Amino acid sequence: MRGHMVYFAFAKNDETKRLLRTERRAGMNAPAKTDDFVVAENQAAAPAAAKIPDGVYAETVLAVEHYTDRLFRFRMTRPAGFRFRSGEFAMIGLMVGDKPVYRAYSIASPAWDEELEFFSIKVPDGPLTSHLQAIKPGDTVLMRKKPTGTLVLDALTPGKRLYMFSTGTGIAPFASLIRDPETYEKFEEVILTHTCRDVAELKYGFDLMEEIRNHEFLAELVGDKLKHYPTVTREEFSHKGRITDLIENGKLFSDLGVPALDPAVDRGMICGSSAMLKDTKDLLEKAGLVEGSNNKPGEFVIERAFVG
Ligand code: A2P
Image 1: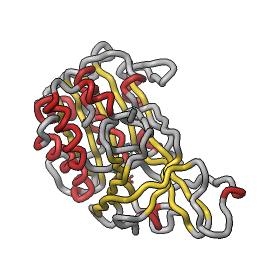
Image 2 (image 1 turned 60 degrees about the horizontal axis):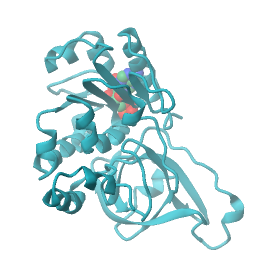
Image 3 (image 1 turned 90 degrees about the vertical axis):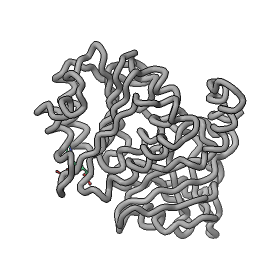
Image 4 (image 1 turned 30 degrees about the horizontal axis):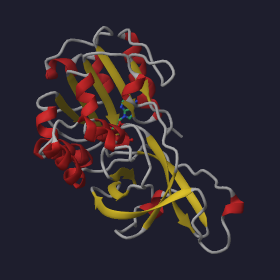
């Protein structure tokens, strides 16, 4: 049975189940973060011809959308039997010459979706993204079999308000979680912050909100529980500044009409560059929140897998 089937059980009736299946195409993709990194494959598994290595999935690209010269998303088929928890990441790869090249990508689609979505940066000389940015529908993308990660609901203790702090492609795991009904079962309010250099880089986040608002099933379930707080740092916009500054000076909370961070009710997830992770973590700890993990749930979690 496929991983997303668990949400068919959640669905209240047959009509809702049908919508979950048919609406799966409405999603977007988001991948992971910052620096490209390569994981060397077992060389013995890469013979002269560009043979797909054993033990990895080879999936088909279904759609590609380019947002800026630095950002794009793609959707691909989901292997039968591939299960993951919303917010986890997987190793995504391509054959480059006769060798597979991989990089960690957050799965941006929710666990119930029958396709997989990723949101990616384009690094001009990146070992993987310099090639990945050229993929087209019908191409083959590799994926290692085991997803993992800390940005999962299970790693948080119960709370009322969930903050998702992201910069750049760090929005990817949250693109998965904000489309997962379980997020709204566990939290009364969900606040997604997304900070980029300029407004064009925020588009994926705006598209996600639009998709949820127009989604036959999610729209009702999410209602007004989800708040989007986009900010930019390098051009004029309604919300300006690094999220860390906006936490520190309290503007984030006054703009949203919510009280300051409180470990009794607030929970956090952080995904961004290593400097952003550190600075945001320091602020959450200053407010009294304690970091958690899969083994020891806590009041906030960080994804460090993407940091170079
Ligand atoms: P800034 O423009 O002030 O550097 P990038 O595209 O380089 O990954 O950055 C994405 C966003 O993250 C930018 O808006 C950037 O702001 C912001 N940022 C970079 N470092 C930090 C940090 N230490 N704390 C909070 N935000 C950061």
